[in-house]
Length: 155
Image (cartoon, rainbow, N blue to C red):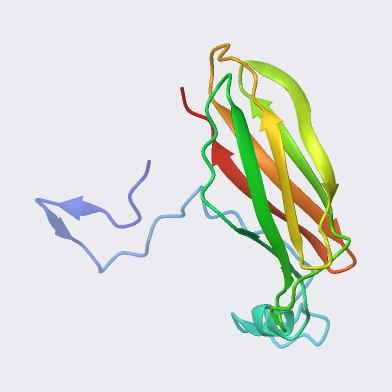
């Protein structure tokens, strides 16, 4: 790495012009300062988040504590709601998947849809431990989009 200013005895000699920096190659974007074709500045932070707040989307919540242990049967109990009204959403498609770093396959443990009260309740038999780290992923899809909840599986 070259120094921009020559250093003499630990002090900078600013009387000389800076040496050319080989790492400071110019990139020609085709725009000059003040050019009307230059890209617009980025939107202020939070603008797109504000737009999302105004649009309803699907929210999944655990309706009870979940305990996912290898080789055991686990109860799955979730509720799907509208993000704006907090109203329960019926007819939401739900799938409970098992993923493991030891096996690239995703195993569908159970699936179905929420009732009119927005709840989905089912039981799922988890596979025995086969190495690696595993998770149960509860996914949901509706007209409002998709949402998921992830839980690690323990021994």
